[in-house]
Image 1 (tube, one colour):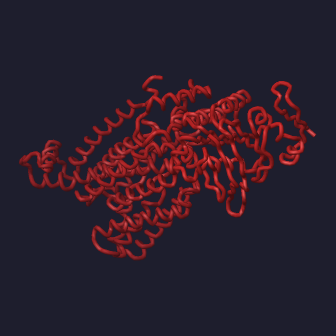
Image 2 (cartoon, each protein chain N blue to C red; image 1 turned 45 degrees about the vertical axis):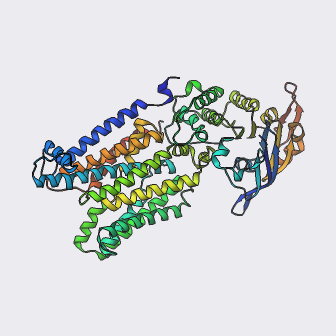
Image 3 (cartoon, chains in turn orange, red; image 1 turned 90 degrees about the horizontal axis):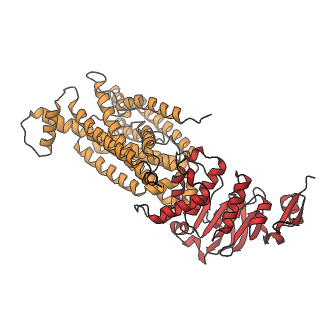
Length: 345
Length: 254
């Protein structure tokens, strides 16, 4: 047996990770340069090194502020959100053994939206903190509902997906009800924008919080990567391989709930990233999670930053909601995956 | 390693599926589990392997109550081959067999020489070495069964539980697999449908009917015409085979 066989596609993984890292740096640089007011890449570089305190170059305070305070934090939050959602998708797909599993499909994003909308429209609490808390509470309620309906996600993968569909319908209905009956026109527009996701308004504190959550989650997931692999043939089979199934399940669901709730509370409900990215990554690096999870994180980050750039340039002087872009790119891509993976007659 | 079950009971809702089963398997023995559809063979196997918790009663492996043993420690000694393993994930044969090493590896340990040796030996034993790079999805039912037996062997267990391992296999591989299980230097419990194969390859046979043990002993003592009529509802004549001297069952077309 050759080394290439004992460790399948290590070259593929290394290449993908390296390519993604380069692409991510390029995408973040572009995202920082492009906008209503385009700034040269050299100025961007100087503004960033200034911001980091490495240089003290003379550039206009406006450009410095736009690059450092607005665009760079936005691009980095986009990267982390993409990474986080892709990791959530990969984990849920492994645990539920269903290709359709992701936070959006399981109703978690819908729950977070309802929570946030309650805060915006009903004025429960006040300020940015309570908006996040509302989203958090909503995300966890949705998770709890899905867990309850599916008997702790032990009643089979399809059952859990159906419970998720029911939960998203319920929470979306609640959101629409609150907005249409109680909100004014301005609030309805705010809510709409938020439901489809937006990176507008994210700042450095968001980045710091999200960075901590994503890094810790990814570390936990990579630590448990082998256990996730053991779920390939189902829960009982994982138990036969020595996996403490109930405990792993609980930890993994908690990690995805925290990750999703954090992301949705910051940037709204962004669909399709968690669904499409793991499939694309699996196609290149294979199904083993020790490889798949880092690949998902990087591919998700690149995808989201690129989607954010597109959302800002596709219509002049206007930002299209990010969820629209991810769906417009994601759906055709997903169609290709489905078409290629269809059972051969 | 020995297995002892004491008064095992298990059921769902108000239906009892395994009812007061006690049995003992000696180290190195191959025990056959036979019984009609729905007699509780699979459930009993899962109880014995610790995959389900009995409502009452207990299972002792090597003198230790398995409900007190951590899952991973138990899996280092006990392997289970389920009946119809299935997945949508695009895994290779090698990936599947490598999963068998899961209980022996800590979270971040590398792939050791022992792991590699166990996997290659297991693949060799089920005659799948040449197919190791193939996608699991493209295998036939019988080949998948062999891969899962290889995975169980890669687990380097002392005890092997197999739930109808000869399903989907052609006769050559049925005999091959059962010969392999018999000759392995480990204790095994095999649920089987084919009574003649059970007779040929098992040291002792346990007969289940509606969750209860109705007979237990060597093939010669257990496989009798009245028992087959009573439990399996078939007319049959039984004689010692002139070739291997074990009981051979001749079913009557009626």
